[in-house]
Length: 245
Length: 296
Image (cartoon, rainbow over all chains, first blue to last red; front, side, top):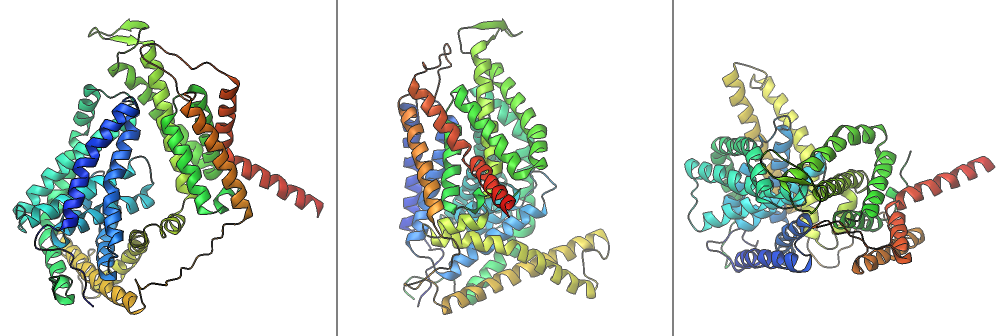
């Protein structure tokens, strides 16, 4: 019996498939929304896009029948992220979720990073309340984990504090903040306009700064010990094995 | 009061919420919007009682007003100009009405979600999706279980550390912070080791082998079938109406509501029936129960 490797040394075919689906499916859906639904219903279209992008991950993951160990490691990391989010519930935006998702992506690969992020976003809303924002949070957390995994595999992201903190801060501010603010515009206002979007970015600026700062701080404290622990687990139980073994 | 609709099969619950949420987001027709908003309010109060009333008044009403005001400030389309702002931008009747309509839609969706949270508990969700995506729903259920478990284990570790004077409640602030980090570190190692053990246990019990059975206490019985069919019928009528353009209205450049025909009234009634389905079920069950109780 050989465990399936959690992360290969180079980008696997399934990672490419997911990346291509994201890059091709999103524009297609936007065009479809403009043509068929007459460019109204922004929330509905954007919700569809967000769900679309998550489906390939779910399908690919289900299809390859993951091993129990892999499932459980993802569940543990997501649970730590959820517990971290609930531990800091009194401080708005000051959350360790993105930091843990990035660590997961770096340590176990892009796909695991996405799943940890999306699961943490989804399950934490069982504790905080589901709403139209759930798919957006799932997508944002997931895509940051995915990016962290890809950049690490490509060698652009190192396991150093500086590199991780830099990526964490930028990803939280631009990816999470950028997408979540766009999402809230599509939820709150029915008529899309650049002014509303700009107003949303301006009003969300400080929230995003706090969130980014929290991510940098948590990565600064957590990155090394967490990565060491994960590496130890991987070595001890042979979670990461070349396919031929 | 006990909610009877929650006792139906999860697929009935889920289809209901998927339908009302989707229709609530899509239909801009004033009558349909009013129907959906009113039904959502009634059902949320039925489910959550006093809490729902305060939630709706304290959060939803201000939200409704803010969203309604926001639209005309940014949106200047429409032919009926009421007055001009200081910067020369017109405020139009159409954009005000559209703002109110969009705000209603948003608030309706949020209230429906508050009902969804009360009815669709996580076990129902996992039951439903366990068949379609077994691996992912297993992860969901494990995460849901891990969170309270980790909090309990954190207390155990913290108490053990307290015995040797290394708890977060002991020492100077710097020492406390360091102690806190140590406790979290112990916690994480324990969680990971424990997880591998669980995984090995699962594997030795045959996880992932074919021919697996699953335990569930949920049956799809006659009453579920009846309600499910009624619901599908109502949805079919509403979708037909949507295809014929009955369920929406035009806001820009000028407002235009589609002409009412006998068919539109059927669609309105079907929508009312769909949205109020749980409320009707609850009322009927209540009457039935009262009648049985009075006969005894």
